[in-house]
Length: 257
Image 1 (cartoon, rainbow, N blue to C red):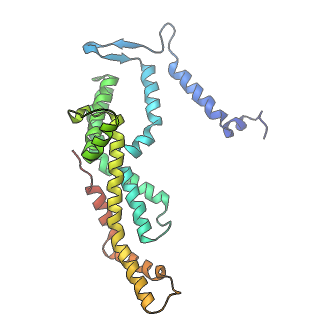
Image 2 (cartoon, rainbow, N blue to C red):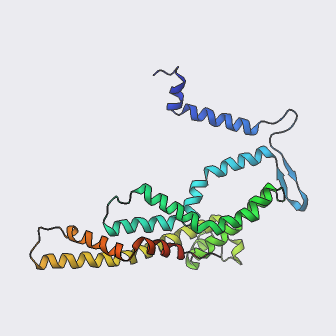
Image 3 (cartoon, one colour):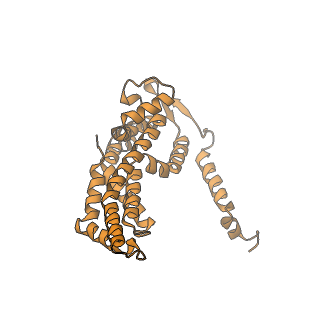
């Protein structure tokens, strides 16, 4: 395939760059005589952005959506606990990574549903009905998410990042900026996820130790303890309805303000 073939540009990434430039040009395009970017002072000291500038800000926000889903919701804790559970069971790649991610994603939507509903009621619907400006909608929409993240964040982690940022203290939770809240929230989520994972490992570790001790006492040193402990761990997990307990534990481990 030569460089004169149009498919060549799409396969080498040039087509994506061209589409991006066309999209940006369309956003900044404006009718004759009107500037593409305007910021108009509004009542109360606020500002009103032009439609093209709002669309550009929305497109930029969409590129950050995957990172926001990973770092500002319950997804991080859930996927870590599920991965540690799979390792504790010793099932290698079962369930597969795709299944674990899908399960964590839909469980995240279930847990975050009240937060998303508040964002929709307080920010999105009033903005679509032209009751709020773009900046006011962003401010209203961040409050439910910020309240959720603060409810999961440990005070020690928040104090640590507050000190690292050079601030002595914060007077109220409303004054916590996202640049400080997000790393504190992620640190707390990692700590909580590993605590839950440790508790999951304990019963399966006991089974491994018991099986290894019995085989050694019987002189069966050539037999892998994994061959015996693996079905025992699966049987224990199924008998206690492990998946239901796991989903219940993960869902109830979050504090919803």
